[in-house]
Image 1 (cartoon, rainbow, N blue to C red):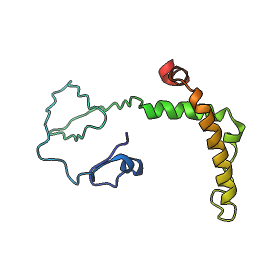
Image 2 (image 1 turned 135 degrees about the horizontal axis):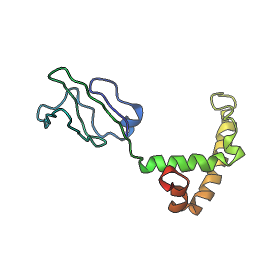
Image 3 (image 1 turned 180 degrees about the vertical axis):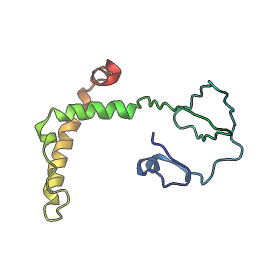
Image 4 (image 1 turned 135 degrees about the vertical axis):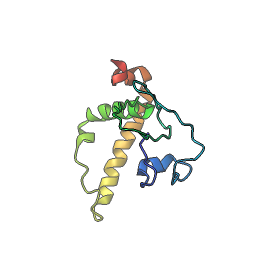
Length: 134
């Protein structure tokens, strides 16, 4: 879901769901596609690829990222939480060791409220509240 460039550090989020270390170099056995002037190539999400121009060239890259279920859900979740003044309140004391217990208690109360609300959610309502529903 996030981009990675060989040789650069891995995005922290990507590291949470990647089962192996990222390669240090492009695999020698990779398929090669040679494009001609006017050609178009679609590279799907998650496909390793690199480009190389053998002569002077001009290329245009259009990036289109189709939403994931995570994208749809988090957009709906944010919209739902934004309706509550308690969720919109400033997250006070989170970094203050002497008052962090207050922050945890507040957050626990908000999560309990959310846990009570979530069983009433339905896919059709969530999708209607996102771009997918328009």
